[in-house]
Length: 122
Image 1 (cartoon, rainbow, N blue to C red):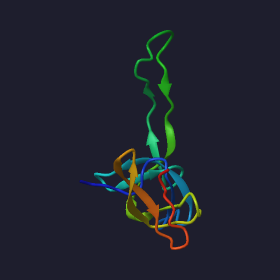
Image 2: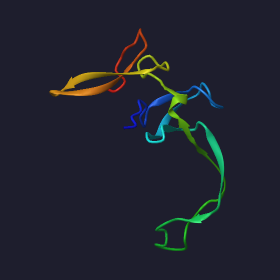
Image 3: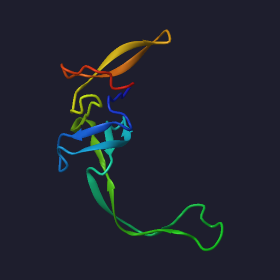
């Protein structure tokens, strides 16, 4: 249904927004929302209240998560990021090819740069 060509663990470059041009790893991908969370990019500040941790009533007092202003990465539309090819180290569009592995056809992502054309998934 909602397939994206960017997966968790991929190195991507931001195309738009306050972090335009910076690169980072995808921490989480949300195909239904068409969004990804990129490590240390598109950070937002959230004011958090100290809360007790779950299952911390073992020994001693309850442990608390610290409160205050916390910076965390917010989700970015997948159209605002571009995959960086691990072979040529440049941002690239992603193509799909089929490859035969152990008698089965498998879809493999491919760099669309004319001078590269290498497989992204090894």
